[in-house]
Length: 464
Image 1 (cartoon, rainbow, N blue to C red):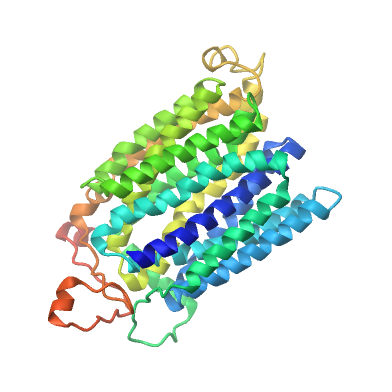
Image 2: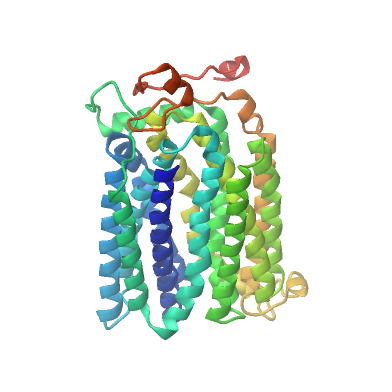
């Protein structure tokens, strides 16, 4: 486990630095424009490039050294951050177009890095520890959410954006140094890498399609990530409609505390025995937290809702990641994970795009004094600035309940663990050897770069 924890520490610090910059730039732009739409486009610029590069990133990760891919992606992201700082501090006017372009380039680099990272740590740990390791990895992002908003909110007023960028660059250097000390194993392949990128991308897609339960799980998580996209855009305007940037930092910190607590629980517990049942049972909890956050204009209520949502989220993601890692062969994990992340994120840009117009042009006017919903919905949740955004949070809670219902009603999703056997995780170059192999002196297995065929139950065969 030592190589994994060396990798994790570097990525933890890098995540904190990146989240510092992300939070600071969003607040910096919103404070100067006052428009939810401009804030939403910054959020969209962080996500859309990831969506476009993910499939090709998966092919590159399966072809090349995953360690080198992470080093190159980190370097590109750092250069984009430095250029962004120059634009923000030297330009006389607020050039939103150029800001969005640089944010998009940095996000594309981050998307490549994310795929390489997710396909690397399963090679460093035994399969039976994946649940706990996924909890530790979720703790990395939880720590970033816990530390970055509070620190960035204070530093923006005290030291300015340049200090935040300097901290981000320092964490980047630490991440690069830790990567340079590691040797991350690669799955062995029998054939040379002569196939085109498109052909290898198609092989990853066919590998995914051969598991209908996982495809159904993607459908369920489309609801989840659409809700998450809207919530990420709307949370800052919601809190700032009745509170200060410092209170926003406290609310975001509550989310970090909740995610850290859920991640610690997952890392110790390893997740429920029935992973699918655990995920579907926690979706309604998230829906209830959305409802709570939209009911009243209170920083305490918003912090409670964000804490509850964030506490169960790493458990849901840990269970989901463990399922995918167990069911996907090592030689295909880069491509399959990239396709999964692309489909997971497909509706998140839609959430970013519709959140601003819905808030500014539809729901906010409806819940202003004299608005069409002021005497009905407004009698329950109040009227005035921010109440339309609060009503949107209530609708997101209802949409989360729908996601849970879809998972329960989809037979391939509900019976995923029982019907789909675990993939055979062959050995990788330099990977952890199995104890039984050490006893009999076995040579490392060779992963064939062809579609792994799992033995499906007769019901699955008939359906195919």
